[in-house]
Length: 212
Image (cartoon, rainbow, N blue to C red; front, side):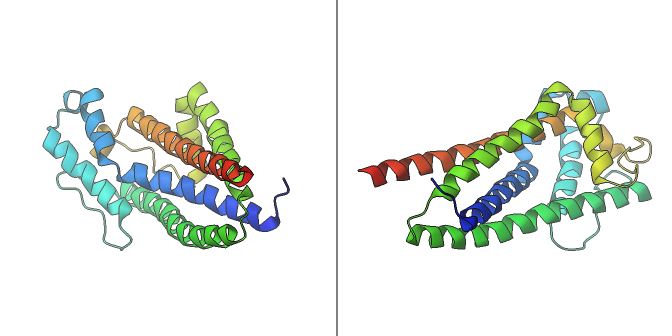
């Protein structure tokens, strides 16, 4: 099967969209963290109450999900200038994913309608391949050495060391253990793989329908 340039472009758009949606959905999935509060024994290790932990965590998530320029304010935690800068940088990264998800969804939908009229579905097969290959590439270092992957990501994503929080000045780091971020990474990979499977199943169904 020959895949034309438009199908390749559409598959790249859909792949980036699926990844962006997976990141945004994981960020917005507060229940994942609420489960970790108990699973990781965060109240016991920090001395904070569950309600206080949730309130300060929710402040971070609501700030990261917003598009406005309202400054981050914790209900009960202090925050250093370095911490404020870091959260602003993190929000900028999430904004990129949010814009990619919105733009990709709109352009992807238009592209899908165009290809449907042409009865061309090769982009689905390519999208399924790309979205399963990427988690494999990313998932390997995560599985082999999460601590190294976590540190390497921050070294690449940020041009400063503000992400190395001092618990004395930025106590929010106490309620955000590395294991929680590992669970987020796993959820993102699972969602991306799920998107790949859906694209693959739709492609197979369309192909079987065309054969009949």
